[in-house]
Image (cartoon, rainbow, N blue to C red; front, top):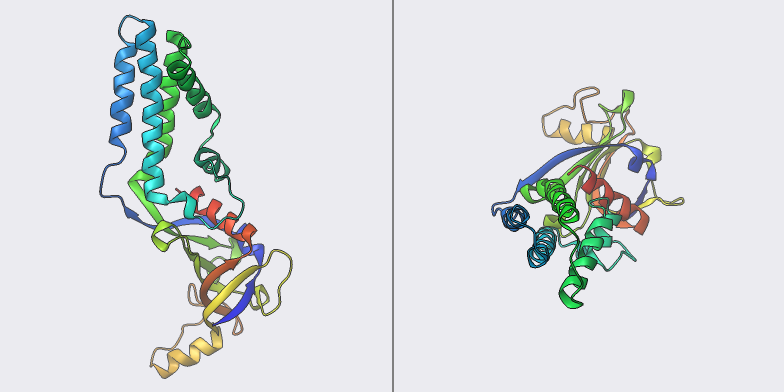
Length: 258
């Protein structure tokens, strides 16, 4: 295997969902069951103990959802250097959630349970219940199907000739495998600032692949979709080794199509 360097321009290409695998167990339902209990209590005549129950249940519903997400995605295995250790802050940094209301709910629940502070009033608890519902809804899809790959396409006139498929995610142990077609100036032996380091397993020009296919009895069609455009366009297959900024952007791209 050899190292090559890919232009960071590809990280500006259009992102499209490609494929994923369905989650067999319904990890979503338990959080909704806990939320339903909290909403049932909110429908009863309000009392301080009842509102404590509501706050505690809402915190449990969100905690259950966070643990379900982590069980599928193994967020701490994502190869991003200097990522936040706190799971909530890490998810926010990846654009998956916003943490402000969750942290506020956690702080209230801790004060209510451990410091014997009075819970928020009935109306405020209804607001937290509604927030919890939105939190669950916004993360439902992540527990329905786990992405295993996404595509990067340049757009415009070049879209039919060039593009990359990125295999990434927990099923790939968060190792980013990339393959596809680029112009020759986009993959080099030397590197520039922020260029993406690749460990190459396969690399050929369009002419070289045409010759291989010819020997196999299957000539390459001229300007065939997804086959480059010019004779020196390059097809490659390899894994991303760095830098950290590229792995961060690939991770953000992965979660943006969920």
